Image (cartoon, rainbow, N blue to C red; front, side, top):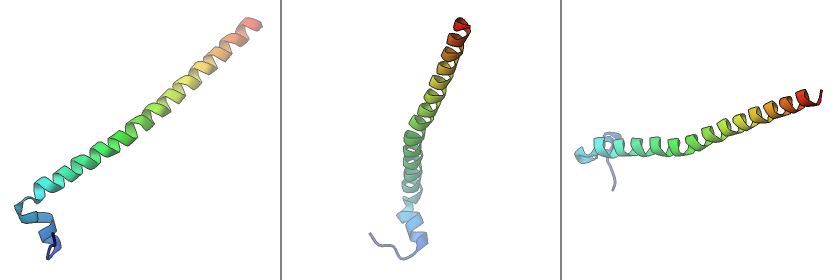
Length: 64
């Protein structure tokens, strides 16, 4: 499908609002699907690091 102008691309014969909103929703979902696991991984690593520091600190108190 070829368009004569940018305005025609945006309007898409009256269907532009639906088409472009579908693209926006799709991009938001895809970004969320990438960002959420990265945030969970960062939080998990931080929690594991804190647990290790607490465990090492508890082990040092017992030996002294």
